[in-house]
Image 1 (cartoon, rainbow, N blue to C red):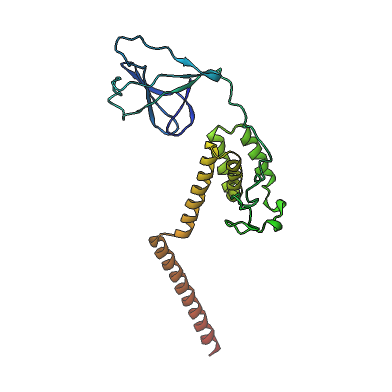
Image 2: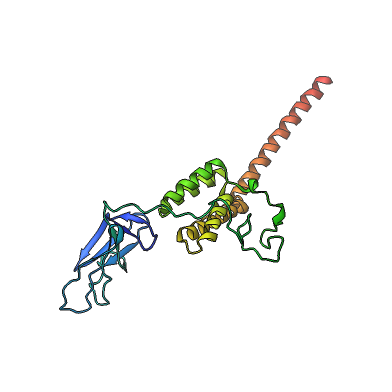
Length: 252
């Protein structure tokens, strides 16, 4: 049985759970967050309501009432929410519906940075591109990234697939291009949660990498490197002086 964790928004298996006084608490194996669900107890004498069936094999458990049983004492207090339980035989999510070229910005957006265009402007105010000079071939993803992006569109709602793609393109140095592809998707679907999360993750990873590079080595490491260089220079100088002394002695 699987459920959707409200903390990391992943579809995960139920591996660790505690049931105490009709309150179910499950731990997400991906992020470790606890989620609690319990039957609705709006009236003490009312019978327990049956789960409400939903589409595609998904069932919603009722949210716990304010006076529901407290969470298990040995664990941190989990949040109370409606678990989305997915049966193993539930059909997979449908592929993402596309409306246009996934690699090109839609009309009304800069073809380079995908920022909104002004009707009276001949150049983009965000990236400075002169629209008349735009060459589409210069802003196409590589063949590898294009194939990976098409495969990602087939499993768009699986965040693990996004994470794997981001790790691969980061090693190849294509973060700028994949960030543009996420912006293209957002230009076509502004409320796409996966596209928003992917764009923000690209910015976070690039910022973190840039910060690590700009910070450089630690002061202690820099001092050790300077000491090692000075020691090497001193040893080389002594050897050269010794060789020069031997040559002068032999000449006399």
